[in-house]
Amino acid sequence: MGVFEFQKLIESGQPSDAALRFWFLRFRFMNPLTPFVPHQEGDFAFGEFLSERLSEALLHMVEIPVSTWLLFIPLLLCLRPVFGFNPTPLMEFLVFAAGGLLFFNLFLFWRLETIMNYHTPSSKEISEYLQALAQPRKAAQLPQAPLELLPPITRNGALCGLIRGARVMNAQESLFILGPRGVPALRTLIQLSLSLHVVAVTVTAKLLLSPHYQHVMFAVLGYWSGFAPLLILLLSMGLFPAIATNFTLLSNIGSLASRQAIAASAHRVQLQQLERQYQILQFLRFRADTFFASHPGRAMGEIEEANQIYSSLPPEVQKGYQDVFHAFAKIDVEPRISLENIFKMIEAFALEERIPDCRAKAGETRISGMLQEAANMIMHLLEDETRASLPPHLRETQKRVGWIFLLFLDSRNPFSGENSQDLFDFLDDDADGYVTMNDFLENLEGLRPAASEEEIKQLLATISHGARGELVGYNQLASWIDEMEDRAREFQPKGSSIR
Image (cartoon, rainbow, N blue to C red; front, side):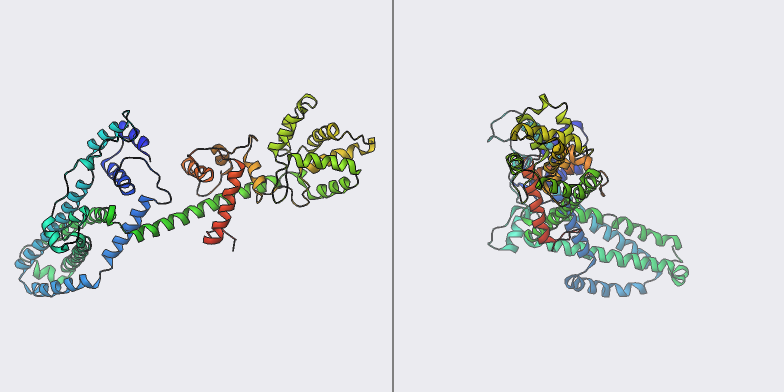
């Protein structure tokens, strides 16, 4: 989403504070100096990167490292004598322990929210800045972003400087206690808190379920009093999703982000895009092959028969056909005349003046297989140009030879989705020389998962190497197909048979 689309969203009053925060962090991450200036992300997806980092953070919280166990085991040993308490002291200890863990989680949540609020301005400041961007100004005169108006970061400067030493410290690092070591230290504290919560919930549940503790340990205060610490612990554990989310955001923006993780995420995004685009290409080829095979006029036997008839014609007539063919053919691996060039032939020789509806008949050759009408049209053209008079018994032969040039002297299956020119002609339904977004959407019906309009816009931008929504010409489509084939050989996406 660009700055102008987001500005409209702001004016409508729809975005939530979470959406504003994410949008700001995304633009700040991609362009730290001017967070609100629109720019291209390229192959990097900030949202997917954060999702991957969040999954990794949750995995680290579950997989407790040795350093956390070294802190965790002494605490468990200290708690061992607690289970020898009388019922009242035991109940009091469980309540205070649950309250202490709740207070510790609240402290972590408050600290992370404080740092996050320092990084992100308020919704009002973002809205005012977007309105300032819309004002007329020179290109080099951008209004200051809310982040640029903040005073220099000096929090924990003395303590972080003592830990860091003489080395220069990044401003974002100074927001964490212990400076650059604050990120792994905070991760360890979150892991320790989660582990203690799991142990505390397990112990409390065990006491509630054990018949001995039901009648003895809670005899004084009553059995239901044991649910008090359990409810406090569950309330405290409800803060972990917010803590994990904020910690992931703060530890993966600006200079704190891992370049290696960014490169790995970008590679995964590129591979996903390649698999999706290759799936779209294969689906379009399938639709084109299905369309070409459904027309009986494209039979191989008729092509071979027409080739034999063409070989029996006088040399001067054959040369006339060849001259016209090469004048309008596109030089490729196999020279072919596209439907677009057939229309150019009609205009060049003014065939519309002599043949009624010849342009429509030429278009019908790829839609309804009206071979005879197309052959008649080509014969009028060749009779005018070659000036060769044929006997009446060769008139029908002449019509069949016209179909040869519509099939472009191809003795195999004349049209195929594997050929880039045929695929382009199939997509270019109106034969104007360009493929539009609507052409793609119509031919991608039935694709699973379905292609959205936004996805097709991005695909057109990729094919045309330009702005989104741009028209696609034949050369651009052919270059994209060649690029997809080359990349498929390198990455071998799902559904690819290329080796």
